[in-house]
Picture 1 (cartoon, rainbow, N blue to C red):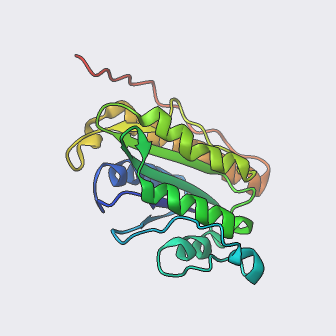
Picture 2 (cartoon, rainbow, N blue to C red):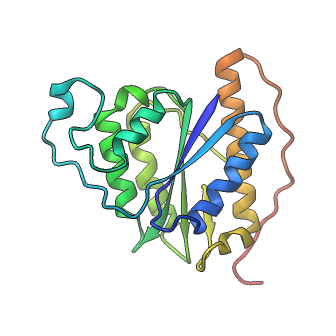
Length: 206
């Protein structure tokens, strides 16, 4: 079994990557293969509602000049997806939203029925609104939403600082545990529940 984790940040190894890496490491501990795909810094175009993807019937976007079709192709052999994005002005980074909208519309057959989760990262605020924005399209595509002990949010400003958010990192691990259980349950019909870490709350003001 394999999970595709998408780093929707223009920073290759920033705080979004740090959060996704925590989840990926836990997936691999649970025997699930994990791949982190960085969308890069090139422009990801928005959907122009041309309908060519439906006319061509190839489960691909007609525009093949960015990462969208690469993601669709990878999801044809992956069992679940985690989409991560930083928060800009209280919203997910635009390139992450553009990718999500086009990959689901053009390549929906590769995503239907597969477990999905969203991870958002911010300096201070807006993460819950961004989290909800990115989660809704997966719900519309009949994709089971994987939960954690809290919303899948991590906090940090400078590169890698989200690793200091101990509760956020624990939330990523719990998300990975829950996704592992769901995938194994789908595959076997029975699975042993992982041990739950004692909750490690972290407040902004100490």
